Amino acid sequence: EASAAAGDRIYDLLPEEFRKGEPMGVNLAGNGIYTLAQYGITQEQVNEFICGVHEHLASKGVNVKFYRSGGQTGVDQAVGALNEVFGVPVTVHAPKGYVFRGADGKDVKDERLFKARFVPQMAETLKRKFRRGI
Image 1 (cartoon, rainbow, N blue to C red):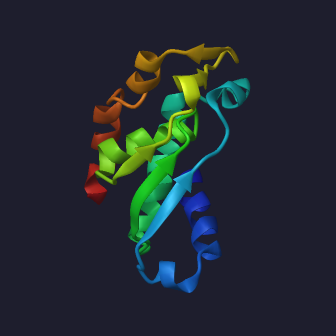
Image 2 (cartoon, rainbow, N blue to C red):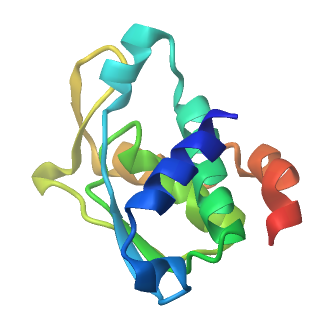
């Protein structure tokens, strides 16, 4: 599975203390959904992939105590899934004006819509898939 392979690559790059369970925080950032959508990747697929990487790293003893995100779509938005599925604390730093870019590449400036992206959306589906690791 792709998330396990990615988790193995990340694990190999971690300093020894983190491979041995020393608690760490992670700033999660990456491509927005407007870029990923060009390759047919949905937000739900990104959420599932990021949850799979987290679960795989946890199974190897990596202790992520919190995640931080810049609040954009795509990889940044997947932190919400990590909180909902695994209960890992998450901090989202919103850009000025709560601006985010949708899959269509257009910027949206709306505080309510910005925040709604981090409310449980497909969490039940993800919880059923990953609950075994909790």
